Image (cartoon, rainbow, N blue to C red; front, side, top):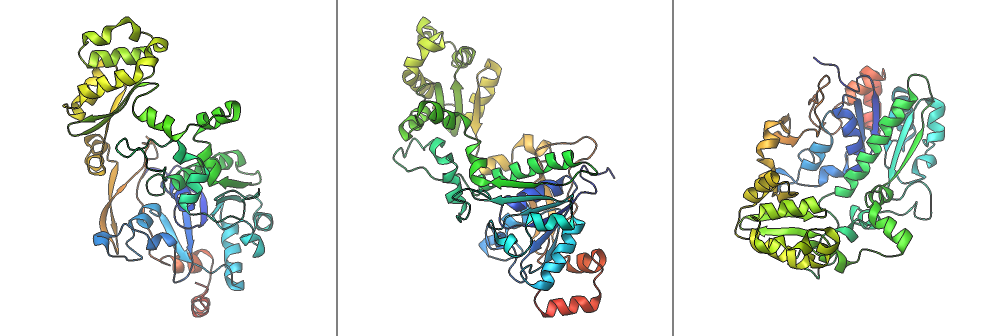
Length: 408
Protein backbone atom coordinates (compact mmCIF):
# COMPACT_ATOMS: atom_id res chain seq x y z
CA UNK A 1 0.00 0.00 0.00
CA UNK A 2 1.28 3.48 -0.88
CA UNK A 3 2.52 5.64 1.97
CA UNK A 4 0.18 8.47 2.91
CA UNK A 5 1.27 12.03 2.19
CA UNK A 6 0.90 13.09 5.85
CA UNK A 7 1.81 9.72 7.33
CA UNK A 8 2.88 10.17 10.94
CA UNK A 9 1.31 13.62 11.39
CA UNK A 10 -0.96 13.64 14.45
CA UNK A 11 -3.92 16.00 14.66
CA UNK A 12 -6.29 16.76 17.53
CA UNK A 13 -9.61 18.33 16.56
CA UNK A 14 -11.77 20.25 19.03
CA UNK A 15 -14.31 21.75 16.66
CA UNK A 16 -17.96 21.67 15.60
CA UNK A 17 -19.98 22.02 12.43
CA UNK A 18 -17.93 22.98 9.36
CA UNK A 19 -14.78 25.13 9.37
CA UNK A 20 -12.67 23.28 11.95
CA UNK A 21 -13.86 19.79 10.98
CA UNK A 22 -13.29 20.57 7.28
CA UNK A 23 -9.74 21.78 8.02
CA UNK A 24 -9.03 18.55 9.92
CA UNK A 25 -10.74 16.45 7.23
CA UNK A 26 -8.43 17.84 4.56
CA UNK A 27 -5.47 16.78 6.69
CA UNK A 28 -7.02 13.37 7.38
CA UNK A 29 -7.61 12.83 3.66
CA UNK A 30 -3.88 13.34 3.12
CA UNK A 31 -3.14 10.64 5.67
CA UNK A 32 -2.84 12.49 8.99
CA UNK A 33 -4.03 10.64 12.08
CA UNK A 34 -6.91 12.86 13.22
CA UNK A 35 -8.58 12.33 16.59
CA UNK A 36 -11.85 14.26 16.85
CA UNK A 37 -13.05 15.28 20.32
CA UNK A 38 -16.80 15.59 20.88
CA UNK A 39 -18.86 16.53 23.90
CA UNK A 40 -20.14 13.43 25.77
CA UNK A 41 -23.72 12.41 24.89
CA UNK A 42 -24.29 15.51 22.73
CA UNK A 43 -21.53 15.32 20.12
CA UNK A 44 -20.80 17.68 17.24
CA UNK A 45 -23.63 20.07 16.32
CA UNK A 46 -23.33 18.78 12.74
CA UNK A 47 -24.89 15.51 13.89
CA UNK A 48 -28.19 17.36 14.25
CA UNK A 49 -28.03 19.05 10.84
CA UNK A 50 -29.27 17.47 7.65
CA UNK A 51 -29.57 16.16 5.15
CA UNK A 52 -30.68 12.84 6.61
CA UNK A 53 -31.62 9.67 4.68
CA UNK A 54 -35.39 9.73 4.11
CA UNK A 55 -35.44 13.06 6.04
CA UNK A 56 -35.44 11.21 9.37
CA UNK A 57 -33.09 12.93 11.87
CA UNK A 58 -30.52 10.65 13.46
CA UNK A 59 -27.24 11.67 15.14
CA UNK A 60 -25.28 9.00 13.26
CA UNK A 61 -26.79 9.63 9.83
CA UNK A 62 -26.30 13.32 9.12
CA UNK A 63 -24.92 13.75 5.63
CA UNK A 64 -23.09 16.89 6.75
CA UNK A 65 -21.37 15.13 9.65
CA UNK A 66 -20.58 11.99 7.66
CA UNK A 67 -18.87 13.97 4.88
CA UNK A 68 -16.87 16.24 7.19
CA UNK A 69 -15.52 13.48 9.38
CA UNK A 70 -14.40 10.64 7.15
CA UNK A 71 -10.93 9.25 7.86
CA UNK A 72 -11.02 10.41 11.51
CA UNK A 73 -11.08 8.62 14.82
CA UNK A 74 -13.61 9.93 17.30
CA UNK A 75 -13.69 10.21 21.09
CA UNK A 76 -15.86 11.94 23.67
CA UNK A 77 -14.32 14.16 26.35
CA UNK A 78 -15.50 16.94 28.67
CA UNK A 79 -12.50 19.27 28.84
CA UNK A 80 -14.22 21.51 31.40
CA UNK A 81 -13.82 18.90 34.15
CA UNK A 82 -10.50 18.52 35.94
CA UNK A 83 -10.05 14.90 34.83
CA UNK A 84 -11.01 15.76 31.26
CA UNK A 85 -8.58 18.66 31.27
CA UNK A 86 -5.76 16.35 32.33
CA UNK A 87 -6.61 13.86 29.58
CA UNK A 88 -6.76 16.68 27.03
CA UNK A 89 -3.25 17.79 27.99
CA UNK A 90 -1.97 14.25 27.42
CA UNK A 91 -3.51 14.29 23.96
CA UNK A 92 -1.93 17.69 23.25
CA UNK A 93 1.45 16.25 24.18
CA UNK A 94 0.84 13.48 21.61
CA UNK A 95 -0.33 15.83 18.83
CA UNK A 96 1.53 17.83 16.21
CA UNK A 97 -1.51 19.99 15.43
CA UNK A 98 -4.55 21.16 17.39
CA UNK A 99 -7.49 22.50 15.38
CA UNK A 100 -10.03 24.32 17.55
CA UNK A 101 -12.95 26.71 17.15
CA UNK A 102 -13.82 27.73 20.72
CA UNK A 103 -14.69 31.41 21.35
CA UNK A 104 -11.64 33.59 22.10
CA UNK A 105 -10.75 33.38 25.77
CA UNK A 106 -12.66 30.17 26.52
CA UNK A 107 -9.62 27.90 26.42
CA UNK A 108 -7.57 30.47 28.31
CA UNK A 109 -10.16 30.38 31.08
CA UNK A 110 -9.60 26.63 31.29
CA UNK A 111 -5.82 26.98 31.27
CA UNK A 112 -5.72 25.41 27.80
CA UNK A 113 -4.71 28.38 25.65
CA UNK A 114 -1.72 28.25 23.33
CA UNK A 115 0.69 29.80 25.82
CA UNK A 116 -0.22 27.14 28.37
CA UNK A 117 -0.26 24.24 25.93
CA UNK A 118 3.09 25.04 24.36
CA UNK A 119 4.74 24.44 27.75
CA UNK A 120 3.44 20.87 27.42
CA UNK A 121 4.32 20.57 23.74
CA UNK A 122 6.68 23.30 22.41
CA UNK A 123 6.29 21.98 18.84
CA UNK A 124 2.49 22.25 18.87
CA UNK A 125 0.81 24.02 15.95
CA UNK A 126 -2.51 25.36 17.21
CA UNK A 127 -5.00 26.50 14.57
CA UNK A 128 -7.83 28.59 16.03
CA UNK A 129 -10.84 29.36 13.81
CA UNK A 130 -13.38 31.96 14.97
CA UNK A 131 -15.88 34.28 13.25
CA UNK A 132 -13.75 37.43 13.66
CA UNK A 133 -10.37 36.31 14.95
CA UNK A 134 -8.65 36.44 18.34
CA UNK A 135 -8.23 40.24 18.43
CA UNK A 136 -10.15 43.39 17.54
CA UNK A 137 -13.45 44.88 18.74
CA UNK A 138 -15.50 42.01 17.26
CA UNK A 139 -13.41 39.19 18.73
CA UNK A 140 -16.12 38.14 21.20
CA UNK A 141 -19.02 38.40 18.79
CA UNK A 142 -20.88 35.18 18.10
CA UNK A 143 -21.98 34.42 14.56
CA UNK A 144 -23.87 31.91 12.50
CA UNK A 145 -22.74 31.23 8.96
CA UNK A 146 -25.22 33.85 7.74
CA UNK A 147 -23.57 36.53 9.90
CA UNK A 148 -19.95 35.74 9.04
CA UNK A 149 -20.82 35.40 5.36
CA UNK A 150 -22.29 38.90 5.24
CA UNK A 151 -19.49 40.28 7.44
CA UNK A 152 -17.00 39.12 4.81
CA UNK A 153 -18.78 41.04 2.03
CA UNK A 154 -19.65 38.01 -0.11
CA UNK A 155 -23.36 38.80 -0.71
CA UNK A 156 -22.45 42.16 -2.26
CA UNK A 157 -21.00 40.42 -5.31
CA UNK A 158 -23.49 37.58 -5.71
CA UNK A 159 -25.35 37.77 -9.02
CA UNK A 160 -29.04 38.19 -8.28
CA UNK A 161 -31.52 36.01 -10.11
CA UNK A 162 -32.55 38.02 -13.20
CA UNK A 163 -36.16 36.92 -12.62
CA UNK A 164 -36.16 38.43 -9.10
CA UNK A 165 -34.03 41.61 -9.40
CA UNK A 166 -35.48 43.15 -6.22
CA UNK A 167 -34.50 40.25 -3.99
CA UNK A 168 -32.10 41.24 -1.20
CA UNK A 169 -28.62 39.64 -1.20
CA UNK A 170 -28.43 36.39 0.77
CA UNK A 171 -25.66 34.04 1.84
CA UNK A 172 -24.19 31.39 -0.42
CA UNK A 173 -25.63 27.87 -0.40
CA UNK A 174 -25.11 25.62 2.59
CA UNK A 175 -21.99 26.49 4.58
CA UNK A 176 -19.95 27.75 1.61
CA UNK A 177 -18.21 30.50 3.59
CA UNK A 178 -17.30 28.15 6.43
CA UNK A 179 -15.70 25.76 3.95
CA UNK A 180 -13.60 28.66 2.65
CA UNK A 181 -12.33 29.36 6.17
CA UNK A 182 -11.57 25.67 6.72
CA UNK A 183 -9.62 25.50 3.47
CA UNK A 184 -7.59 28.57 4.43
CA UNK A 185 -6.90 27.05 7.83
CA UNK A 186 -5.68 23.77 6.33
CA UNK A 187 -3.44 25.56 3.82
CA UNK A 188 -1.75 27.72 6.46
CA UNK A 189 -1.45 24.79 8.87
CA UNK A 190 0.36 22.72 6.24
CA UNK A 191 2.66 25.66 5.54
CA UNK A 192 3.60 26.00 9.20
CA UNK A 193 4.02 22.24 9.48
CA UNK A 194 6.51 22.40 6.61
CA UNK A 195 8.37 25.38 8.10
CA UNK A 196 8.48 23.82 11.54
CA UNK A 197 10.29 20.74 10.23
CA UNK A 198 11.68 18.27 12.71
CA UNK A 199 13.03 20.53 15.43
CA UNK A 200 11.59 24.07 15.27
CA UNK A 201 8.89 25.24 17.71
CA UNK A 202 5.25 25.44 16.69
CA UNK A 203 3.04 28.49 16.19
CA UNK A 204 -0.44 29.75 16.98
CA UNK A 205 -2.49 30.31 13.82
CA UNK A 206 -5.37 32.80 14.14
CA UNK A 207 -8.01 32.27 11.40
CA UNK A 208 -10.85 34.78 10.99
CA UNK A 209 -13.85 33.61 8.96
CA UNK A 210 -14.62 37.24 8.10
CA UNK A 211 -11.11 37.80 6.74
CA UNK A 212 -11.17 34.48 4.88
CA UNK A 213 -14.23 35.65 2.97
CA UNK A 214 -13.08 39.27 2.55
CA UNK A 215 -9.80 38.06 1.04
CA UNK A 216 -11.72 36.30 -1.74
CA UNK A 217 -13.17 39.61 -2.98
CA UNK A 218 -9.94 41.49 -3.58
CA UNK A 219 -11.22 43.50 -6.54
CA UNK A 220 -14.30 44.85 -4.77
CA UNK A 221 -12.37 45.64 -1.60
CA UNK A 222 -9.58 47.38 -3.52
CA UNK A 223 -12.11 49.45 -5.48
CA UNK A 224 -13.60 50.83 -2.30
CA UNK A 225 -10.24 51.35 -0.58
CA UNK A 226 -8.89 53.38 -3.50
CA UNK A 227 -11.94 54.89 -5.19
CA UNK A 228 -14.47 54.84 -2.37
CA UNK A 229 -16.95 53.15 -4.67
CA UNK A 230 -18.82 49.93 -4.07
CA UNK A 231 -20.34 47.43 -6.41
CA UNK A 232 -23.97 48.24 -5.82
CA UNK A 233 -26.89 45.93 -6.35
CA UNK A 234 -27.69 47.71 -9.62
CA UNK A 235 -24.14 47.18 -10.84
CA UNK A 236 -24.30 43.49 -9.97
CA UNK A 237 -27.65 43.16 -11.70
CA UNK A 238 -26.24 44.94 -14.75
CA UNK A 239 -23.39 42.43 -14.90
CA UNK A 240 -25.84 39.55 -14.72
CA UNK A 241 -27.61 41.04 -17.73
CA UNK A 242 -24.41 41.51 -19.68
CA UNK A 243 -23.81 45.23 -19.16
CA UNK A 244 -20.12 46.12 -19.12
CA UNK A 245 -18.96 42.82 -20.60
CA UNK A 246 -20.84 41.03 -23.34
CA UNK A 247 -22.52 37.82 -22.22
CA UNK A 248 -23.81 36.89 -18.80
CA UNK A 249 -26.33 34.21 -17.97
CA UNK A 250 -27.85 32.88 -21.21
CA UNK A 251 -31.19 31.02 -20.96
CA UNK A 252 -31.28 27.94 -23.19
CA UNK A 253 -34.16 25.57 -23.90
CA UNK A 254 -32.97 23.18 -21.15
CA UNK A 255 -31.19 25.42 -18.66
CA UNK A 256 -28.49 28.09 -18.68
CA UNK A 257 -25.02 28.80 -20.02
CA UNK A 258 -22.70 31.39 -18.52
CA UNK A 259 -20.67 33.24 -21.17
CA UNK A 260 -18.41 36.27 -21.18
CA UNK A 261 -16.48 38.35 -23.68
CA UNK A 262 -14.24 40.66 -21.72
CA UNK A 263 -11.42 40.52 -24.31
CA UNK A 264 -11.41 40.95 -28.06
CA UNK A 265 -10.54 37.32 -28.81
CA UNK A 266 -13.42 36.22 -26.57
CA UNK A 267 -15.82 38.33 -28.60
CA UNK A 268 -14.49 36.89 -31.85
CA UNK A 269 -15.07 33.41 -30.44
CA UNK A 270 -18.69 34.27 -29.61
CA UNK A 271 -19.16 35.66 -33.12
CA UNK A 272 -17.90 32.37 -34.57
CA UNK A 273 -20.18 30.50 -32.14
CA UNK A 274 -23.21 32.39 -33.50
CA UNK A 275 -22.21 31.59 -37.09
CA UNK A 276 -20.69 34.99 -37.98
CA UNK A 277 -23.98 36.91 -38.33
CA UNK A 278 -23.67 40.09 -40.35
CA UNK A 279 -24.72 42.39 -37.51
CA UNK A 280 -21.85 41.04 -35.32
CA UNK A 281 -19.20 41.99 -37.89
CA UNK A 282 -19.75 45.73 -37.43
CA UNK A 283 -16.36 47.41 -36.93
CA UNK A 284 -17.66 49.11 -33.76
CA UNK A 285 -17.60 45.75 -32.04
CA UNK A 286 -14.06 44.75 -32.95
CA UNK A 287 -12.34 46.43 -29.98
CA UNK A 288 -13.28 46.35 -26.32
CA UNK A 289 -13.33 50.12 -25.85
CA UNK A 290 -15.82 50.65 -28.69
CA UNK A 291 -17.75 47.43 -28.00
CA UNK A 292 -18.42 48.05 -24.29
CA UNK A 293 -20.99 50.85 -24.76
CA UNK A 294 -23.03 48.38 -26.85
CA UNK A 295 -22.75 45.50 -24.34
CA UNK A 296 -26.46 45.44 -23.33
CA UNK A 297 -27.58 45.29 -26.95
CA UNK A 298 -25.01 42.62 -27.86
CA UNK A 299 -25.86 40.54 -24.80
CA UNK A 300 -29.55 40.61 -25.75
CA UNK A 301 -28.62 39.41 -29.24
CA UNK A 302 -26.60 36.60 -27.71
CA UNK A 303 -29.49 35.58 -25.46
CA UNK A 304 -31.89 35.53 -28.39
CA UNK A 305 -29.47 33.29 -30.30
CA UNK A 306 -29.11 30.83 -27.38
CA UNK A 307 -32.72 30.54 -26.24
CA UNK A 308 -33.73 27.67 -28.55
CA UNK A 309 -30.48 25.72 -28.22
CA UNK A 310 -29.42 23.06 -25.74
CA UNK A 311 -26.90 24.12 -23.10
CA UNK A 312 -24.57 21.19 -23.87
CA UNK A 313 -24.68 22.10 -27.55
CA UNK A 314 -23.73 25.70 -26.77
CA UNK A 315 -21.02 24.64 -24.33
CA UNK A 316 -19.27 22.21 -26.70
CA UNK A 317 -19.54 24.50 -29.72
CA UNK A 318 -18.15 27.36 -27.65
CA UNK A 319 -15.09 25.25 -26.80
CA UNK A 320 -14.45 24.65 -30.50
CA UNK A 321 -14.81 28.35 -31.28
CA UNK A 322 -12.56 29.57 -28.49
CA UNK A 323 -15.42 31.28 -26.68
CA UNK A 324 -15.49 31.19 -22.83
CA UNK A 325 -18.84 29.63 -21.95
CA UNK A 326 -19.88 26.93 -19.52
CA UNK A 327 -23.11 25.07 -18.90
CA UNK A 328 -24.80 25.62 -15.53
CA UNK A 329 -25.46 22.19 -14.01
CA UNK A 330 -28.03 21.08 -11.48
CA UNK A 331 -26.96 18.89 -8.53
CA UNK A 332 -28.41 15.84 -10.30
CA UNK A 333 -26.46 16.61 -13.47
CA UNK A 334 -23.28 17.16 -11.48
CA UNK A 335 -23.58 13.83 -9.65
CA UNK A 336 -24.08 12.08 -12.99
CA UNK A 337 -21.34 14.01 -14.79
CA UNK A 338 -19.41 11.63 -17.07
CA UNK A 339 -16.23 13.59 -16.34
CA UNK A 340 -16.54 13.24 -12.56
CA UNK A 341 -17.56 9.60 -12.91
CA UNK A 342 -14.60 8.84 -15.15
CA UNK A 343 -12.22 10.29 -12.54
CA UNK A 344 -13.90 8.45 -9.68
CA UNK A 345 -14.75 11.66 -7.85
CA UNK A 346 -17.63 10.05 -5.96
CA UNK A 347 -16.66 7.27 -3.56
CA UNK A 348 -18.97 4.68 -2.05
CA UNK A 349 -18.45 4.44 1.72
CA UNK A 350 -20.11 1.94 4.02
CA UNK A 351 -21.04 3.38 7.42
CA UNK A 352 -22.28 1.11 10.24
CA UNK A 353 -25.38 3.25 10.84
CA UNK A 354 -26.00 5.15 7.61
CA UNK A 355 -25.14 2.26 5.28
CA UNK A 356 -23.58 2.69 1.83
CA UNK A 357 -23.59 6.30 0.63
CA UNK A 358 -21.69 8.07 -2.14
CA UNK A 359 -19.43 10.89 -0.97
CA UNK A 360 -17.37 13.48 -2.86
CA UNK A 361 -13.74 12.36 -2.62
CA UNK A 362 -10.86 14.81 -3.20
CA UNK A 363 -10.32 17.50 -5.86
CA UNK A 364 -6.81 16.25 -6.62
CA UNK A 365 -5.01 13.11 -7.78
CA UNK A 366 -1.62 12.20 -6.26
CA UNK A 367 0.54 9.77 -8.22
CA UNK A 368 2.46 8.30 -5.26
CA UNK A 369 0.19 8.86 -2.27
CA UNK A 370 -3.37 8.59 -3.64
CA UNK A 371 -6.45 9.68 -1.74
CA UNK A 372 -8.24 6.84 -0.03
CA UNK A 373 -10.97 6.19 2.51
CA UNK A 374 -9.45 4.47 5.52
CA UNK A 375 -12.49 4.74 7.77
CA UNK A 376 -16.00 6.23 7.66
CA UNK A 377 -17.01 9.04 10.00
CA UNK A 378 -16.85 7.84 13.62
CA UNK A 379 -19.82 6.94 15.73
CA UNK A 380 -20.09 9.10 18.85
CA UNK A 381 -17.26 7.93 21.13
CA UNK A 382 -16.42 5.02 18.83
CA UNK A 383 -12.68 5.12 19.52
CA UNK A 384 -12.71 5.85 23.25
CA UNK A 385 -11.17 2.47 24.15
CA UNK A 386 -8.63 2.69 21.37
CA UNK A 387 -7.43 6.17 22.34
CA UNK A 388 -7.71 6.10 26.12
CA UNK A 389 -6.53 2.55 26.76
CA UNK A 390 -4.18 1.76 23.87
CA UNK A 391 -2.78 5.24 23.18
CA UNK A 392 -2.81 6.93 26.60
CA UNK A 393 -2.44 3.80 28.74
CA UNK A 394 -5.60 4.12 30.85
CA UNK A 395 -6.68 0.93 32.61
CA UNK A 396 -10.14 -0.61 32.26
CA UNK A 397 -10.86 0.51 35.81
CA UNK A 398 -9.89 4.08 34.89
CA UNK A 399 -12.27 3.94 31.95
CA UNK A 400 -15.13 2.78 34.14
CA UNK A 401 -14.56 5.66 36.56
CA UNK A 402 -14.38 8.40 33.97
CA UNK A 403 -17.45 7.01 32.21
CA UNK A 404 -19.41 7.04 35.47
CA UNK A 405 -18.48 10.68 36.13
CA UNK A 406 -19.47 11.77 32.61
CA UNK A 407 -15.97 12.85 31.57
CA UNK A 408 -16.24 10.71 28.40
